[in-house]
Image (cartoon, rainbow over all chains, first blue to last red; front, side, top):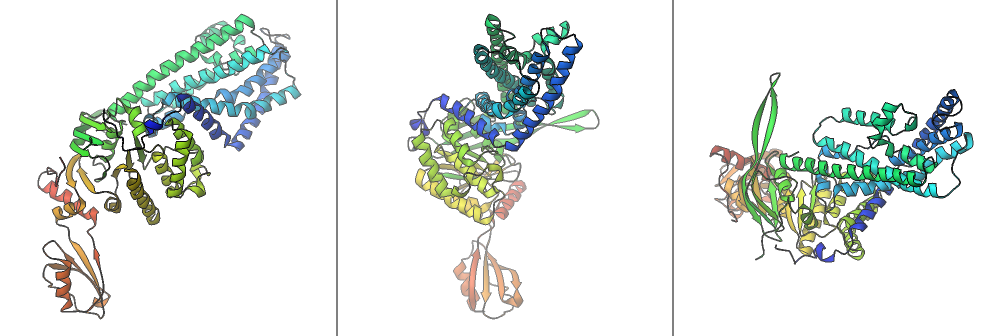
Length: 282
Length: 335
């Protein structure tokens, strides 16, 4: 293979590892999102207001059920509502369409023509985005919740450590699912149908509206064969110590399994789509 | 002699276009976007790749950069197979698509460069030095910390070109880089590119509608028409081939009657009561001979010679090609 030695070839000076490229994308994702301060504030405000509404609805539901409902009392039900509100932004519950747009406009060619795997690059940037949104979008609902209804949180350290891991996994599962959804744009001109379907399914089955534990049996069974409970129900269960010990590890393993499966399928589908684009022209 | 940095042989690319006909039926037509192109670009040289919209320029570039598979034929870029070795190739080339961006819209250029340097795995000392050079030469300092979405088009394109050159690629491919730029921005860009080539020996492939770009930046031109090579050679050869004429524009000291009948010339226009007259002349005479002939009739105060408008030259080339059964010749080729 001929090389071009007359150049100050980048190959000769390349010493940094792929980890550095990953980290750079995490930083880039963080900075990209941190430029939208006003949107962050507006989002935090909305999450908090809806948190108030949801907290009182869940407290009402528990009261109507006679004080406890599937292991939730008024305090834990309200805590559930507040934690869900805090997770909306980091876990990207309301979706992400950047890749689909890039496919539709053809900008994905830029991503393909870079010496880095597009899925890895976008995943790293998404971790940066999640890291940014964690405090400014998560803290306000929790602070208001603590002041208004109080939060029923465990006193031990372990649930928080495992919970932090579970939140990271929830972000990863969410990204992997949305990546797969976005790759449909290689074949579909109009994504609105599949996006709506995905959003309805993920919002309900993740436990964002009511806990998965409150679902009727048939619905709980459906939820269990989808990755969606891994987005919200899983981290909230672990942080509130509703699941502990081996059970908590089992939940983490389920999240990890969903992430692995989704990210691999997403890789294959993206490659297939990209090959189609490259072969047929876009 | 090293291998050519771009080696394209018998390249074809067909697209199937489906268009509705009537209510239910669709007709499928096969369009030959690129139809049997063969050319080599020696390392270190600069090629202007021109043609009308839809002539197959962008399709060729996509195949050269590995984001489109040829229907048949072979492409080697920097000695690599563009599709199979796309990642390796991406480290060897810099590409600017005039219509697309590789910068992050929400972030300042500085952040984009930091990320791109990591993507290309450039060591800190290498890329910061290179960035500083590009910032200096492209005059980016005043807006490097402003989010890209707030930049003017000219600023953004300069930022794009710096992004494409950050990893010092041996081959730079520019797809209509000066589109929409004002005269001053175009000029700065041309000066910069000329200088980069002189310092770093960068090879250049340029598609453009701007004929000044071709004139100033490249030593060789390929004209494509309907995916076929209509011309391959230098600008002067192209002008000779289509018999384009130069125009002598004269400012006279006193108004004079129209200068018709000067041997070897055609009177193009007479302005300001005969104070300014323009005469076209071809290869069969010289500017000196024409001036001498004119000098016998009038006194010339000032003169300019307008070089042929290349758009006109290309149009003529197309006309002559379609007249003689679509572009077969390859001019003063470099096979």
